[in-house]
Length: 381
Image (tube, rainbow, N blue to C red; front, side, top):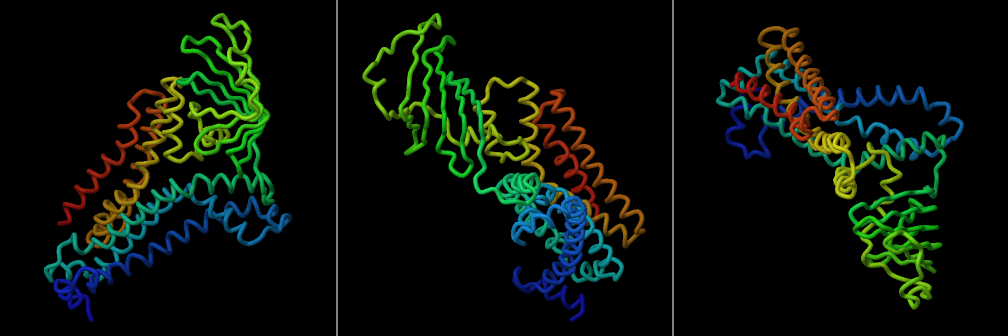
């Protein structure tokens, strides 16, 4: 069946069975897969040059090597996938125009939006995939890849953290933890807790050899207390019966094991939920720190939309390569691609220096280039 017959059949077939939709989707997915595999291969190859000797020395299982490269690649997918979509959309639309297929489709009564709908659907699906990867996979996978590289590809069964400080300013509590395990963060070893009154004076110091988070509250084993008066002078325990208890629960302490783990995690390995939680539990941050971290949160949220936006302006640029000149269409698309990320980087610099509001800066590039893409797309109608 030729393209004209396929276009006519598309009018009568249900959406999930339309021949034209399947045809456009196939023509788009093939170059998309090639581009994406090529970009991933380049990144893996460069990292392999650096890690090849360590892998040979450690001789880790294949699954460990695969997990390392998957974790290493995961943070870069939010840039690699839009780049692959750009090239694939350019090639697909150029190929359609070169064989006059766009003209044949339009002559059969198919609107331009129906023709490119599979491309936009794939871009939207990949945007959702990037969102899920950024939130649920990339933070911990990239951190594990870093740990594997630092451990020379030797698996660490129990990653432990030592000398952990945590300040809960709203509650007036300072935690100092000697040791906690990433495998079992509910158990803390060697805890010293300082609790302050609302006026800032010290109320009590509690030390315990072990504290465990069970049933939604903290349990201290063999706690010892040192109380203070309003002038921070040590005083006797006002509740001696409590001092003799070998195990005591503290349901009023709202800190969670995750709070302590985040203190040992680099900011780039935080999820968006962790970032919001960090800002909520650290009100003492400076204005610049709040602006920087707020921008990072919204930049993470805005990043997946680049898949759809870049595809949106790559489609008319690809049409221009077939109707006018390949050079002009490619130049338009590549220029818009780099301009998009240049504007994003410029907004990041301004926002992190608190020169512009963080939230509008994080979304400005998306909104500006969405407008450009919609305008170019509308002109193809």
